[in-house]
Length: 130
Image (cartoon, rainbow, N blue to C red; front, side, top):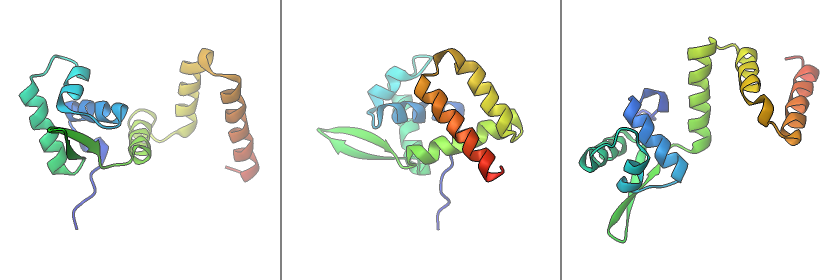
């Protein structure tokens, strides 16, 4: 059985391409190329898309003569994997430190609903004894 691909195993450029595809939901090579830094060549982007497809990260369908690429990893799993990677890399698995850093960064932009949701999660965690 083939190994399931993990987002953290990608190169920097592969991650940038996957980011573009996730942001768009699905994308053509031209749409991906427009979102990448450094003005990559069209042929390079197409080659990278084929590599990502071969590795199992993308699939394509042909629509009106164009290849449209879709991620094979659901966004929820990709989000979880990325968060896990950030937690281990930058916070050594310390969830509280990561939450504090996120809250400090977004402090001014939290809506009242977000604040209430965060407080409810903290209270639920207290009650569960976590």
